[in-house]
Structure formats: C-alpha cells, structure tokens
Length: 344
Image 1 (cartoon, helix red, strand yellow):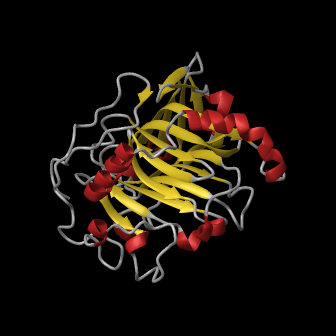
Image 2: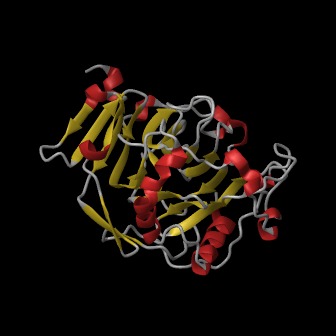
C-alpha cells in the first residue's frame, strides 16, 4: 500500500436525525443535505444508509456547508486525534474567504495538537472585514482529554454578539460595539471543518513538526447542526435581511445568544482557570486596547504584557462538577468545568 495512504488523515462524520438544544428542536442534517467535500472528494466513503461518512486524505482534509449563513448557530460534537499530534490543527470555523478575498470575515475554533502527554489547546479567533492583523485571538487549555470522548463546540453569531461554547459553558463573548465598526463579522459565511498540517507554527512555534509515523490522525464529528438565515453573499444584504426575520427568531429561541448571569459566571470561571493567552492583555502587540475588550483585573494580573499567562498564573479556585459527554442529544446552557488533575 502507498505509504502516503498509510499516513493519511481521517475525518469521521456521524450524522443523526434530531437533537434538542435548550428546549428547542434543531434538526441535524445528513451530510448530503447540508455539506459537501472541500477537498479530497475521491477519498469520501459513505455508509449504506448515508449517515456515516469517512474522509480519508493525505495531509489536508475537510468539508464545507453547501449554503452560506447570515448569522447562525454552528455546532458539532468532536473527538480529536490521540497520541503524538504535534503540528496538527483541527479547525471548526465559519468564513467567507472564498467570496471576499480581501475583506473576509471568520470565526474560528482551532484545536492545536501537542506532543504526547501534554494537553490539547484550543484557540478562538474573530476576524471582520479582512482584519487578519488583529484577529482577536484567545487560547485556552482544555479541561478534559478531547481524544477520549466527544465534546460539543458551538459558535453562535447574531447581530449583537458572538459566543463560543464548549459543551454547556460559554467560554468567550464578543459584543458588537459601534467602535468595532467593520471588525465585527457582517457578511454571510460558510461552515468549515478541516484537519491540516501546520508544522510551521502550531506546536511551540513550529519547534515540533507533524510525525507521520503516528498516522492516520483521526478526528471524528457527530451531531452536526446548522441553524440560521441562508443568504447569497452577492445579494444586497439590507434588502435581503427582511427575509431573515423568521430564521433570526428561530435562532434567538434557542436561548444560546442570551448571556444570563449564571452563564456569565460560568464563563468567567472557565477563563480564570483555563485561558492562557488573550489579545486584550497583549500590550506589546496591541498598545491600544481594543474597544470590545472587557478588562477584568483578576485576569489582567495573571498575564504578562505579551498576553501570555504568567508562570504560576493559573487560579486553583474551587471547581464545579466534572463535565461528561451528554448521554442524550441535549445542549445545556449552564454549568462549569472542574479543576484539571495536573498542572501543565
């Protein structure tokens, strides 16, 4: 067998028929109903019933939604590759870069592989109107082993705010402000899921590369959900928006865009325990604080002027219940994460 095939990436997508989120029914799409291969189509293998799809590819692999959405909920339960994963990036994100090359918008979950025995990390990015030089990056350690069990990762994007969720817990909110201007994503975006070789930067700044002797690297996706207003990006947005009112109401009815006091407390607790980098505290890179930054003194004291966590900066505050993968297809919108079992 071709050794490159032996070293291929594999993405497994399990598709179900229905899920319930926060008391609101959200239908899950069969792959052919909402997605198409992004590259590597010749390696797409489907089960007889069409509900299980394997993508077997070399180096880079991915899929994309067949529609673009002007605001929405983008969600999937994901299990990441195990063992030695240095240099590997699994990304779950929205973007319109294929349509707006010079002024694209993007919202990212980027899962950054690591050398064996170290935690996987996740980075969130917010780009608006081509603002690649100010991507509003934040990085966190994951409070569980994401290679052992599925965990749900969700992005909700409305006219007023963007919230990133891990399972029940919101980990980041970006609220739209007038001062943000075009930095707030405003154009229709597609949903992407990819796995790719980022040896030049993903692990310790590129010090550790992808080692293909550990391939295949397998990332699994299940419970794929898309909810929002489907919109042709080449339409005039203001005139088309009148057709989005019902979709926007459906999106808001999930309750996921509302930041309750309980969810805000859970978010702050997560960030206190697990955030390792924030652009808001990176005064070397960004001497002028961004208008959407909520500077929290308890956070500020933990970070250096590079935005990275100070040595010993993690707060060993009392944690709540241990998060386990849901047995039902329910996304809850409250709860917090436990302490890790060991330090980095």
